[in-house]
Length: 397
Image (tube, rainbow, N blue to C red):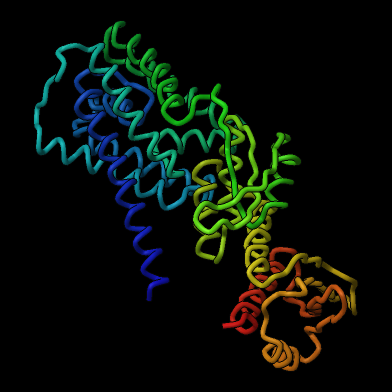
């Protein structure tokens, strides 16, 4: 019961944070962007221009545009848009509609078009930075950018800038030169301020990491990030337990990669893996099959670590009558706390499919000749399921 309560509480908290961030964005649009008539880098900005041609409120126009873009996105890019993007895309126009009812015919709060645009940039950057740091987006132009990324092979950042500038220039269809200039400048400075809110590109951060997966993390920093690291021995102040900590200096992109790696390494079940795939899709687009396999490998390694396994080697050993024979060797730490009686019972139940090597480097050997493992993805799913059986049956209660 407690195990289910924790994820539920976390999900409710995540939902509340996303809702609050979208409310901030909607407030910035309604109270500052609408009175300024500027179309600053957003679907709402395009809606302000279209409101001059379509007899509908801004909330309705924004809702229609977001739904149409979501449909086009699903048709062209498949399931690259996670639940968070769908949720925020629908919630934003809903909040704008609420403000339209509560504050009808609202004029400028600053009595200045320039100050309205400035206030919009500052307020909307707060909301967007919260969404981005929760691995979510507000939909709209983010969907356009992902479509451009897939079919025009354009970098996501450049696609966002191009689509945002097109929206800004659309103000020329209705408004005067001053409004068009404010829209273009607002789009440019909005990107700068947002980048500053999230993480300044030029800032280097000193990161201290204490983890049970020290060797894997050290190799990731050196081999994947191509960065340096220093390992220190330290003692916890509470119980004076000896530990090793890794110190590394990273920039913005390296920090984001390190954060993602840390979270992938901490995966414990299929639900967490699915959530991670959704977040990666929201931020970077579709997850390729090779990356999908890497996520599954990370989950398997996490479970193996709980079992005291220090190495897993596996794959197709040979072909037998046209059927692939998959052989996996799972080396176990000699002092791993596993139930010997449960091991014997499990080996008997699997009837030779699982064997135990008993020497200086004890290991489980799993051999499968079933045709269902026709590719690496299916094999990894089978290995993950076996790890669940091991954890359930072999760990000392």
